[in-house]
Length: 216
Image (tube, rainbow, N blue to C red; front, side):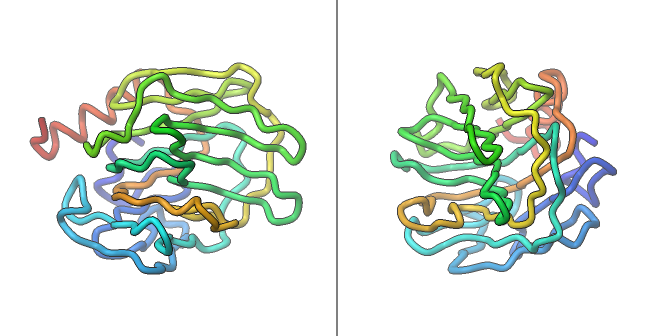
């Protein structure tokens, strides 16, 4: 599983966007994205090219062949100075509005898991809007939702929803509602898995990524 962002993904990987000039899904599941006002460049990438978002109209819409997720992991690399409530990645069930929301708000990393009636949220202690690249991860295992920053555990909420929601839309860089949720910054290597990475696996992915590409 870990390090599979280099290639075709693993059996647990449901979405894998390298964003190396396009939003083709490399997981093997055909969840290819459709770009709106995305700028691909080396400057916007952590590993090679990445996706630039302009804060007003940029987003990637992922095709509707996504999966119902009970336990999950959402992983991405992000660089931004945004201070508002901005989306990194979101999955939504249009039937009952249940969703998984991975975002930045007031500089902090947020993960919420809305099941149609309640929305438990975990917010990081550390800020990630300093204009530097950060690896951000959100997981749910049972009723516990956690966030990690740069390979390290940051915070958790033990009242996360355990209801499995059928997710059939996904977006990178904004919430489907649009409005002020558009991210201004860069995103690279978006991964969605149907298992929760352990703290050891998050650390391994982060260390492997930096070592593989010689990044300090």
